Length: 348
Image (tube, rainbow, N blue to C red):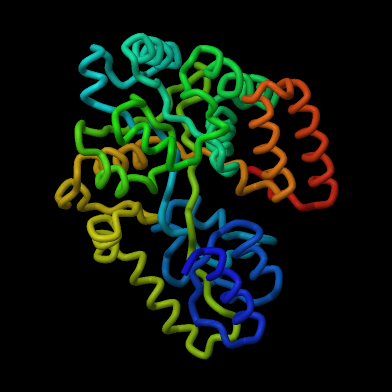
């Protein structure tokens, strides 16, 4: 069942009181947040204290499930955005994982000269445009750097030839395929792609790195979130059993299963990571997650209006139909209106 169909079934079942005891759904304001504000979920604030989840979970796993000051669930499947790269291609070019922005652009220039597409960027699917926006926001905050956020990915990288021709015409899977086949040296996307990379890359060894810092005063902070999360129905007849089950999912024993079998990053640190049977790429991704600060997925904190408009404006910039300044003016107007209506969730 696709996620959209599952959401329709879940929402209807919860509203009629016939839904499951435990639900697994997206953690955004329009998903778990909507269920919470419709008074359909169990308040888990005291459960967090009882089972010690505050100490065991990565803080962000809870923060994304807090609405109106109440914890309604916890995020699972830790996901963050980084750069997959062709290790063999890097060796061929005599380059290493970049530590600075200048090193990164130097690699991109060498890749282009050697016949590679530096980045397998594709954005016909609107949702993928939040990746570079969130990336640059986390690397260039304070807020007065908003112009650079749009300009680097939307103008500079395009003009330098770091992208394939017409990225607006390429779907997300097309960008992935450019990387799988070795045409693109790097692919900037999320850690959810690890199993697919391991399955599809046949001719080189894939690696992964967090995008390097741009502002020397701001450390690398990859956009980080949780693809989905657990919550409990307010009408469940078995609350204690639900809590005990969820507590098991947060145990070290379950953590090994999450990583080895499901190939996802659980919302807590697994102590036996060095001893687990993992592909080098998978261990690389998890170690990076443990080592860096988590940044924000901006779309988790904004409305569907702003999300859709940002995607359309970004495509307009890439297509040369709108300027960065015009896009900023439009986004600021929408942001102010959404904040006025109280629809935005604040950053900490």
